[in-house]
Image (cartoon, one colour):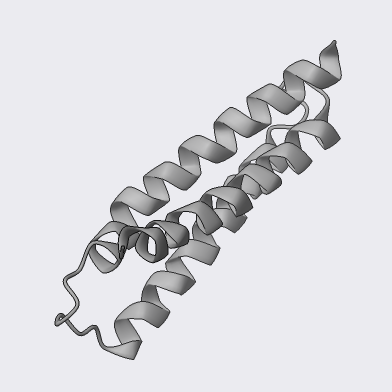
Length: 99
């Protein structure tokens, strides 16, 4: 039961971070009109910030591993998978939104 609770908490944690990352970093780029052009530097900066947020989110789980009463490995792996899936999902919004 401890593993299942850690997995659920990791999914919620990673999903929350992923949604916030989408709202604050990528929403302007994804919801942009077709004629709006972004400089490559802007995209690269957002990518770097996105990677940094991912690392900080997982580092936070690592640093708090002794204070969190859940299984550390299950929490870390499920959080990482959830962060990765939210990044992919937010990029698919643009693809499927162009019907």
